[in-house]
Length: 240
Image (cartoon, rainbow, N blue to C red; front, side, top):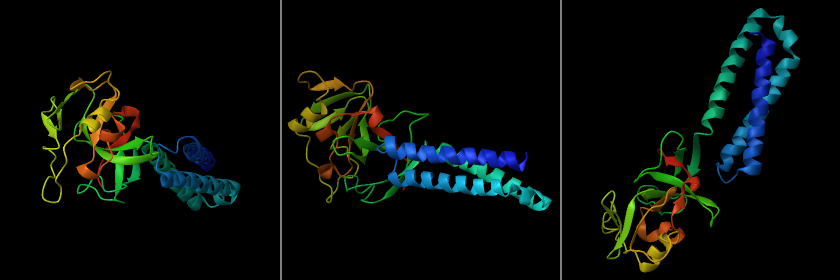
């Protein structure tokens, strides 16, 4: 492949990165980490400007065959690298844990990687990044019940009859530092606000999920905001 063609491809990649960064910032800032969007924008801009500079001076490069071959190889590797980064940017992103609602699993300001649910579906016990429309923020919570699960309210607890899990008594972190309050009638009313009528049990509707924070007593979750729709789930927390 000629140097001119490689440089043309790198310019196109640079333009795509710049346009993608601008699109994320202007139209989709609730979906992506803001710092990540700016990085994509700046990398694309630098990539574009460097490619233009090399294209302008390509004749000088072509007069040095060894130098030209080296630039061919380097630019090809950079092109492949940035195409890979660009593709992964829609699958993996970086997010920051806010507040202490997931202690002791995750703490305030922990940095975590978020994997989008492209090839799999959310499942019970997954720790996920959720967009909270009322707060205009992403929060990290744990899935308690998924679409199709039978959920009921029994003696101050919420029960997932499908997985035979009870909250808060089955909450894994109960000890002298984490003693959890029961689920109140008001909590249950918020959880079931998308269900018609007063119910003691229901099947989670398609596309909805019930999520709680591990730090039960200090978490704003489905007990306040109700069930979360699938589109509000940014992805699965991989690790910090």
